[in-house]
Length: 238
Image (cartoon, rainbow, N blue to C red; front, side, top):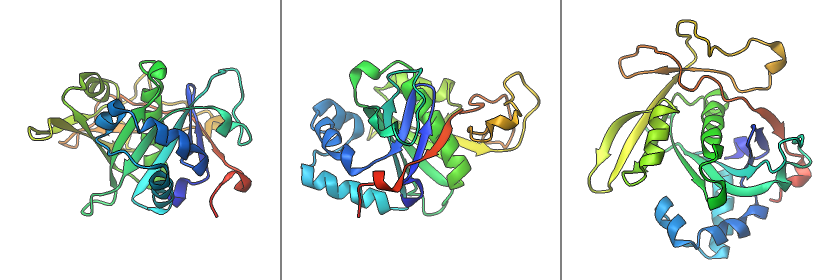
């Protein structure tokens, strides 16, 4: 997606950057792993095919992709100049494939490096992506399809990200989860976001709306991140 081709989102644990050519070789090596291929329901690609895929996704307005980089040094201030130097650990994607609802997207995430799993990095990356989708892409509905064998991810989406289960496929052995996004405020709560004017570059808060249109306490109150823009010379496409 061209919309995010220079966008960098900086969180507490990770940095989200666009999928660039410099990432392709590493990504292709990841995707030779039988575990990751099964996890993502993907087929292995040659390196040449992966470069073609990266370019097609860059210009496809129905796909928004960020590479997840780990902040190895929490004290380091991330800038447009050093953002791409952080360690590559996974990716997070949005697919706008619902032709009946252009404001709906399916989210997928992969933490490819085993040593970076179960450290809250995936949770932060999803929160940042959902907030970015709402604020910058006009997304009102997020869905996720998760294998029934991945109970940990299912519970993460249900209990920490405010999703509800709306479907189950016995054939594919997966559940479909949904979250409706709205900027309308619920009753005041201790988790209400700060109105500090210095937070203007941080992700905004939004509420969870259930299927009946009622609003409850927010589960995901605020994905706090800083937004940067890559320098044109850092983009490696023609």
